[in-house]
Length: 434
Image (cartoon, rainbow, N blue to C red; front, side):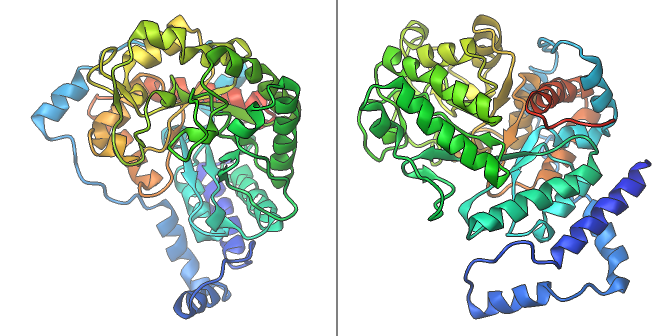
């Protein structure tokens, strides 16, 4: 089917959902409630061509590549030749079915703007076709809201990228980090609380309960488990989210946890590589700088991640930390030393690498957006997580501009797409003819 027809079909679906009210809105003040009521009025047919134009219009993005110093830093990585994922005929067929802009989109996980697909997610899918969405508590009030929203997202995606379903993510670690807190949803205690029993079978059971509940909501990817080592069950950035400080004790829990998720058909994501427990500085607000040596890291913090890789963990999330004695210039998320030399080559990880939130101050306050994107694509971070400020359409514009200027290549885009598509296939998210 021609791309224009697909876009029109998807847009029609999104517009229908926009005015169908596919989830219950959260309580609002009077002005917001009045606007929500107006949003639910039937669409004026005369406005549909305008909506269609808006859905594919690419917003302007400031040119950020004209600074000579910045261009020189970006050019320094342009000649890098990273490893290419193995060629697979099915994956290549799906890859060829996507436009360049859609392939760029398959490198992003983005938030849902409101409680319905029509609040903006439909337009995002038509314009960019992101790999998936992440859900937050403001997207729903009940479990039924979540099911309606995830079903609607997948419905629109089935018309925009036929055969390629969405990754639908959440942070459901347990304890204080829990996206879903419904009365009929079994909420489990923190990792630290579960680890006190020193029972891998308990960890497996807890993971199984959470994974099955996520699947019932239409969520197919959890940004857990936390494999950071930290010995105090406090409320610091890692704190009670950690299973403990002993790398070998924590490693005993890794395989049972991952097995439970694999059996439930839910993607688990080990985080925050190579270990955020070495600092209490919150990378949401500042760049943590630590002096841990590579030998100390290998002997301690990397142990649970090595176990996860040996257990075929499908995805790993990077931490925004700068290890000044290993790579004094770039945090892990942007570091060739950590991404290529350590994670891909030394540890042999072939799965999907996910960033922590791109808007976190550890990155945005210290590195320009163009330089960040170049390093993410060059050094094979496969999924870029957005959660607050950045608009994926504008970032796709910037990536296209970087390709036009020779800072990135289409192969830089495609390597990550191959891994994302392979992950989707492994978890039943590819189907039919591309």
